[in-house]
Amino acid sequence: MARPTTPKLDRELIRDTALRLIDERGLDALSMRSLADELGVRAQSLYSHYPTKDALLDAVANLLTRHIDTSGFDGGDWRTGLLTWGRSYRAALAAHPRAAPIIAAGTGSREDFLAMADAVHGGLVGAGWPARTATLISASVKYLVVGAATTPFATGFADDTAVYLNRYPNLVQAHRIGEHAAAIDHDSFELALTSLVDGLEARYPQAGG
Amino acid sequence: MARPTTPKLDRELIRDTALRLIDERGLDALSMRSLADELGVRAQSLYSHYPTKDALLDAVANLLTRHIDTSGFDGGDWRTGLLTWGRSYRAALAAHPRAAPIIAAGTGSREDFLAMADAVHGGLVGAGWPARTATLISASVKYLVVGAATTPFATGFADDTAVYLNRYPNLVQAHRIGEHAAAIDHDSFELALTSLVDGLEARYPQAGG
DNA sequence: ACCTGAACACCGTTCAAGT
DNA sequence: ACCTGAACACCGTTCAAGT
Image (cartoon, rainbow over all chains, first blue to last red; front, side, top):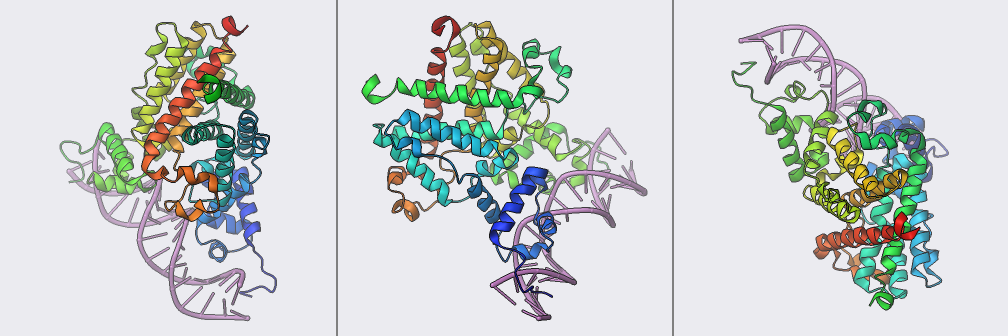
């Protein structure tokens, strides 16, 4: 029974299962063999559907960033556009934190990524920003989103914070990081994004000169 | 000659060679075997000096972030402190772009990282920011730095931009990304950091209420 | 077209042995 | 204390073969 009558695999099933395993076990634990095992198949069968593991991870990245919202630019207000885009982008990655590094790795030219970049750039230029500044602004927001998704605040702190509290007195305030990590990350991103937009406002050509 | 009279290895040599190989060949190409080969030794010998590959990468991360400057907070001005810290942090990572993902991975509780976080938090609180807001602000700047270092702007665009110029008209302005990628990344970070600081200014408790 | 057995050239890491 | 030969349990990927 080398070839079953109804195929056991298809691209979507492989991709969705890969994302589920990343969510459950982490990115490092995803191997072609472990994924095949979960699908009741041998690793080589996956290569009938994706040429390489990287191509599979690209498909997962496309799945993740599929529902990013650039419609906020439609009304012509770049502030609304940036806020809507940044928040939906961040939310898409925060929903699958263990998969976020795939986005940072940024393999190849993904269609959805290009469509998004095009919509944002067009929205900013349409709202009056010079083309080069529009490039810088969209890069800035991307930095915030990717940074927030790949290095949540608790990263870098030991689980047992008591270890260093004596030596680093200013960090005493952060001693409940573990409990409130999700809230801190959400609020940090929100503060950063809104402050950035406010700071950009002052640089808007028709307002600031 | 199992054990030479003068040791062929020490922790610093291993660490520095690892960083050099990452700079030259990329993070993925660094294996314990390839590193040992470069040092004229077998992979197992490295384990006499570092318990795991992760511990070695931690040492590289500490080397990278060693010269980050938090002295800008000393004068009591949080704007100067944030700008100096953010710029030196970003410069440290930009000097070794292929090693930057190590920082994002953020393994364990590195001493230098904690000292830095403590200095920044203390500087912000000392300048009048509430403790929790200080946490959010330092996280915000870290997002910018890590995002800029791990996803430089050209990431995600194909080398041959002609491929998508027809379909994504707004990206025409970005058709020289490859040539100016370094300048765009520098300017994007600078715009983001200064805009963020300006936006925070309006939220400063004694100024904004 | 889709799946498998076997294999290639790698990994990180461990262990016993040598000086 | 420091280094090596050999080995373990993995990787991603390829190839020839089966239906």
